[in-house]
Length: 301
Image (cartoon, rainbow, N blue to C red):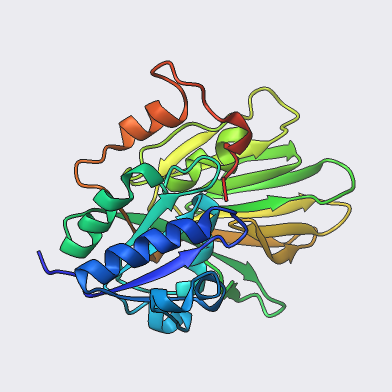
């Protein structure tokens, strides 16, 4: 495989041990003759002698690979800041849990060797796009795309009623606080905390999970990723929020609709060679006797 000579770094600079991890990476890079570039906030954590150059996200996106120091929340931020990039994003977990950031700091040297040699396991992660109807009746695509989920929910007021349509066919009405439409990657985040199923990242599927449903029959649904999903705010005292990966990206008044479908874009998430998603679930959820960190299930940073 082609060797990597330029690596981008994005770190969660609120973590107290981020500078120490950054210093270890700088030492490994100097020994291997690899150039390091980082976003401004990450570069500010580095000592001048480490040789980590500050760069724009557009320049970092052109690096051969990108190391992300943090949890899954930091990877989400990196995906959105970098925009469309073919570079693999390799997470080093210095956050709370880390499903995407599955490599621990204790494996840093092994991870650096994998990144610089190109010998990585790279998973193309499905993303979702969302569109709303404008005043002319045309669908207007929201600029932000989801790696984890699109959420339609009430911020206040009474329970709402949301209609679900799949491929042009009305399926059901939900009386609830909101609806989560998640990717397989996002199945371990908000959807899981709302009672949704775990879905392996490479599954071609989308999960629909209801938030605080009024009816016991309102269960999570797993559908094909080729399905066109439309959610309509049939009854809402106040406009509903449209959140994409945790950020408010639009609103939905009563009678308004949002269309959700699989994006043409995919995020390339990398891990150590031989990495298995089943092993990650077992480790993070305590299936093998370890204690899971439940507080972080909705997405660690």
